[in-house]
Image 1 (tube, one colour):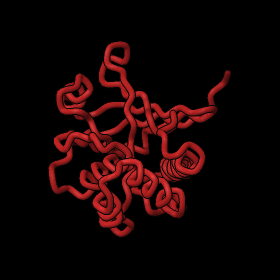
Image 2 (cartoon, one colour):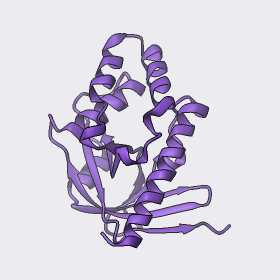
Image 3 (cartoon, one colour):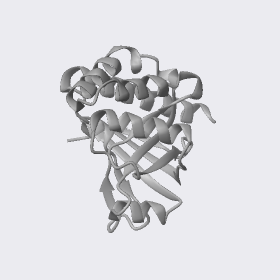
Length: 187
């Protein structure tokens, strides 16, 4: 990876970690705009939607056992959410190096979004919040049951949504950092 691509990736991860930690600390874990990129597939005018993403942690920094424990510790969705917000407000987003730069998202299996993603190998994610705009061309992959990233995404989402469909499809978005772009928004 060239130096410019490394810089964009590091800036993106720092921005995402800071934004996500603020969402946990100041918004009770409610997703904010920086977590929900616009997704464009093929013809930009006809297939654009947004979805909430989760940052992938490296295998060495995985917290899957902790997430499963929080989820199974109580049947009360409010308590589960409180535990997740407390956990993720602390040190979860403190070390940018714990994250790979890949993203994942839960998609309802019968949705138009699922159909569009399942039929594509690539798409473009545009993250936009306040003055930051990141455009990431990504490779798409639907993750199989048992995949670590899939499990982390599902349990992460379940902590915040007790009605999450166990059959939800989990898609991985793997950025091509050499073609990714950052710019400041001009109002």
